[in-house]
Image (tube, rainbow over all chains, first blue to last red; front, side, top):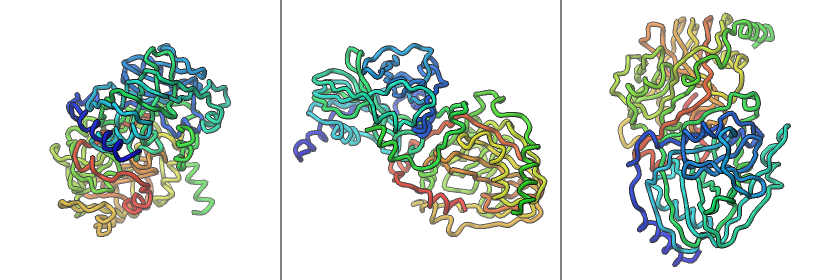
Length: 260
Length: 260
């Protein structure tokens, strides 16, 4: 990134900030999380929490489905299931999730993004407007993308393989000149072990028919909205697979392998 | 520990188990946590949550107070403050806590402990009766102790020093032939960064006038009760000190240094 573009980005984001953190109602500032990233990495793919139940805890978020049947994108109160063919559909209420995180989204910070920026630059730009790297943020970026590269995951059969094995053959899809929304979370470093530190985005096209877990993108113009949350409610699975999984040890390399 | 004592311990614990996990009401199976261990290690000692508010979320637990003014023991709905002189008093409702964890305690597992065992053996014995190392447990051990070694922490003045510095001069107290209760948590490995993995006990004498953070003990006989929880609700501080703290990086050595 050139110096000029850096300054341009900074200017756009700082000038574009509207609203302020902490004005939202306190009880909405909770990220509700099902299970842990460590358990998902270990292949604990059977869900206990239904989509109907998940929706009562938030209207924006990310996750996956029972048996690892696709990527979840939660946007404006609707839960979308992006299956292994890259197609999105509204997820039935009786599906379950083994790993998801949602929050009632209220924009605390808004920014216009008008330069052509890639995923890394987008993350840097968002970071500049955050009040702290120690809080939890839900992020929506809606706009025009010159390029979006996404992946999904295929439904698994028992006995489940570890996630690092599954993603070795992940279907990848590329979209060019597409309108849509990135739905994401930014989690602080200290959540390592329970969630993914840093940014984690899923994508949904404007017509909500395609999407997936974002591997790369180039945003042409759009708008970012950030919701600062001050609480994490984590529900642990009650099933045998979770109880017996080996969840000790550092998983940063595995997290990196499955996210990228 | 000799083979005979090992067998004896195993027998006592397994035979002594009563009740079963999962019979408790679901909404009581939540550990409520204020802030993170990483923030406490960094010297974020100003509390936002009052003792009155904390008590609405649980009746058994651990923590500390604003300005690091002593060790907190929550037992049977009363919050005790063990100050730097090793004395316990009932904490006023308007005090605050920068770090604490409590749950509505309901015994899911109970065990009689009749052999003379030290702290490490007690933890091994408790581990044998847990349904999984991946869940969160509150623990109460009430009985007769041949020996208990505890510490407390002195109230700090701003600018706050890091916790690793504070504990270098921690006041330590030894009790012999004393009755009382160990109040503790057992947290899974994956909470590293937000809480202390493994066991963490505070002690309160039977007359509730003395106690502290447990460094060592020898239990002569007693009863252990364990409450399995399936959720963690974590509230993040809204203050500047938390927002600006450096909470990245691995802190296992620091956690070990302040707990032992």
